[in-house]
Amino acid sequence: MNHEYGLSSNQTKENMFLGFAKKSKKKAQNKNLRSSIEEAEYIVLVGSETGNTRSITEGFVNGLVSEGEKVVMDELDHYTNYPNAKHLIIFTSSFGDGDAPGNATQFEELLNKVTPAQNLKFSVVGFGSTVYPNFCQFAIDVDGWLEGHPSFTRATPLVKINEQSRQEFRSWLSLWNQSMQMEVELQMSKDRKKRLKYLPFKLVERSDLNSDDTLVLRFKPQKKVKFQSGDLINITPESSSRPRQYSVAKVNDDVVLSVKRHSHGLCSQFLAGLEVGDTIEAAMEKNPKFHFPAEAPSIWMIANGTGIAPYLGMLKENTGALIQLTWGGRTTESFDCYKTYIQEAYDFNRIEAYEVVLSREGERQYVQDALRQQEEKVAQLFDEGGTVMICGSMAMQEEVLQVMDEITIAKLDLPLSAFQETGQVLKDCY
Image 1 (cartoon, helix red, strand yellow):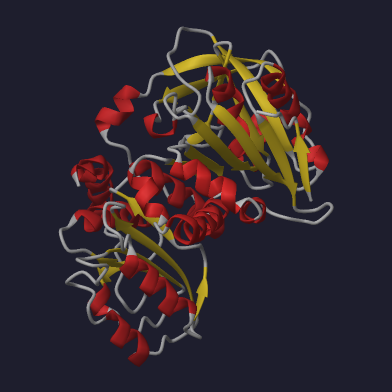
Image 2 (cartoon, helix red, strand yellow):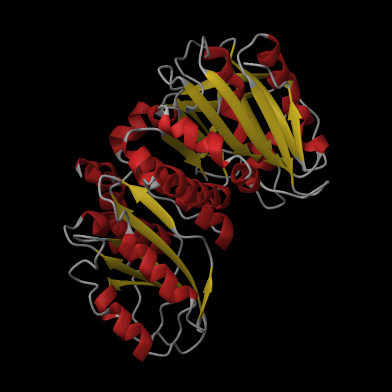
């Protein structure tokens, strides 16, 4: 059920991955953990015309190897029977007008001929550019072939990555790790590690855990640090060496983030156990592709769960844009820990309207359902140069993108990719 509140009348990116790819590769070679086709449990296939996608794939594969997994990496046209395989992960670009890259032209035929020894879980990641109308079309085709094949079961939704975006790849890896209950790490380059400066942050306020095991934390930096709402905070929990990232809000120079406590989540358990007055070491990281679009005439902020966090600070930056927020959660109580921030923004005319879409109460809808019911408003926003921001789960993001694509095609005779290319769609999902 929708609850309405406060309605008023009124290719150079390749080098981003080379650092962790090279470092991870060295680690993998030292351990000599690459497996044979006969013993590999993880099969990672790549479709690449220029080599960019291969570099990214290497980084992921070496992350798996570093975790001690049995992995084979190969080209899509070398697909065969993998007797011990349990997972198939495909990274592929498209070529020309959405066609297969040079090393993937035989994959469909092989898929129809070769019967896997056992059922496999699959994930597909597409790489391309929204400049082209058939953005990631070959990845879409591959995903459809696997979806319709009786020997494959989906592990994660299809994800399409624009211009080799490290941010979007980070989001996919987070989703994949959650699905697999793993902690595959892509090694950062030395330069990036140097840029991350760890500082003390003192917890000055925290909400109680709600029925969804979610809370809001507010930290005060103990040293001067520059950041904006939408930037990322890197936090390394106790008994771990890998930092976790959270999208944050800047509220009166404090860092505000929202965390859902997971039963097996080292960092979420660590953060949920903090008390006011505790101090942690953390590092801020710029995330410029998800900053408040100050020049946009109108902004539609879309989130589910803890994805609302950066918006709590962004609303304070608004000086004139027409903003509406659509947030999805389970119950009315789920929204309570955020409501004070949103209501304050409404009281100061920084937001025009907000709606809460609930999946466990009333009509039991999701965010994408709310968008379908507002087709004219979605189309008008894009047509008038407005911006859509999406923050939350990758599953929600993919549903929302699909719905908006259907709307822009039907109402504006343009695919959503046309508006992504003009910077009217900003995403930070995980």
